[in-house]
Length: 349
Image (cartoon, rainbow, N blue to C red; front, side, top):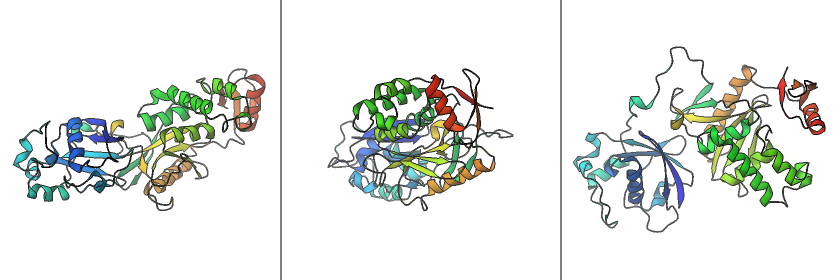
């Protein structure tokens, strides 16, 4: 069983789907969607992938016919009465025989092959403000890629990753625990030579909310979620890709935006004003970065932020220790000061 995320007019749900089980059909998937959304199978309009595309719904076919992957998101909307047919009023039976399908006539099967897109109810979205000063975004296929800003509180990496994988920054402390457990479970990889200090000390340090995270933490989190984390540097446009051990090809990817001293997230939304629950954070890795629509959009977003000087050169920026007030030059001085004094709270002059 694998988790499939549903985005539907009533919100966001997660269902468990037997993608690897023989005999599990498209019809079975539709029953799971009905249980989560209360949208009858004959009225379901399903889209998946990036850019989102309509799924060809033939209920009797095996689930493999849809090409879904673990972690996929399905956008569910409801077909209008004219497209759904009269049988839409018949509720599904809990004892349904999978060898026959009382919900579909031959004409309905043909209709669902080319479903009519239905916009979500207007109440699902917040109205755009009269003068928007919200986060930056760039248009791309299927919507807009938006810069999702998280608090600048020394936990930005963990908050941004939590936002992407758990749809909330509130689970940032859990991200730290995942990192600690990853180090504890892989002593042959995360040893003192790699960590720069004894593993037990590193674990105790990273669990503190005042400690920054970096490449080690992103590597462990990518492995835990079995998803590539692509971090794009605003100043240079460089993309650092932290792939799970089995590689990112054919898997899923999410996007971080790195300013030099701060991590934010980037997610896809149908429009700039869409509420958070309508944002898509995971994207299939389908092609090389130069041809991947999401990665192209991420580079454009970084260019927008670069044009606003929304980055910090960590080699030359002026810092002040917020504990003792000492002035420092660049990340190198900050690291040395932290090692000498144990002070880890820094701010820019």
